[in-house]
Length: 278
Picture 1: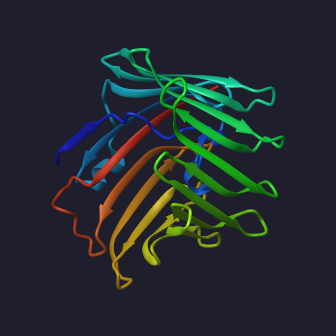
Picture 2: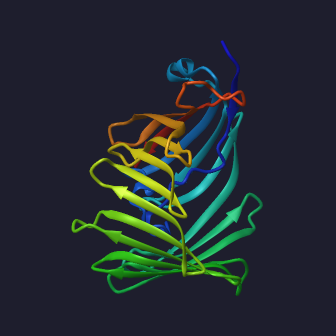
Picture 3: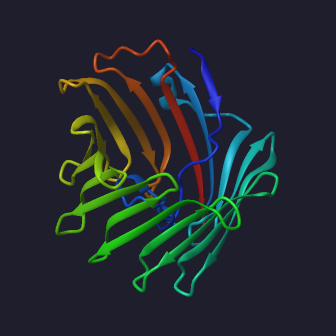
């Protein structure tokens, strides 16, 4: 048996759609159903076959608890059966059920973030402000819509502003996402193929990588390209899903296209999630 390394994830991006300020449905992948608790832990190994059948026996877990509407309430680390809060969250809602304020507290109970959300009459998120103190805004986002789809996101910073534009097909599926530096210079572009379930990542007109997604919108293959268009490595991810379509086991690997594992290993990471529903 080769070495296996244990790691506890500090946080997983399990969040309500309203709190995700990029509108890329391929990356959101929220949990299906009504999750109540999610326990998760990761281990590392250079033996892929071993990880595929490994049953993790550990008393070191992280737990995220959720309210009935899907927002994370408390994140814990569990060590030898003892609950150690890592973060706590508090939400305020409007009369339509939209989150209008999110407060984050660290393990000491101190406020670590305050986020304020504003919506239009349709319930679309049009503004999001991240406060670093009572009055100072750290990150500030504004969104514009057409026919119910977000077509523009502005990120307003003290030093420079950023702009992201979105294009869709007639069915409302995203086709193109372009990020501009200082609003005028296109720097990053994502091109979506809704038939092949792929997303191409371009940096200054050069294809950098292409990601393939499964039917649950989770990444299963990411291929990175050389300047001549050849692939120099593949990042492959495997999943096991429950009956609601949420993954309970995920194995990530980082192999070059010739199958040689980097000497930096171990490259394989298994993450196990145990999900309890309302």
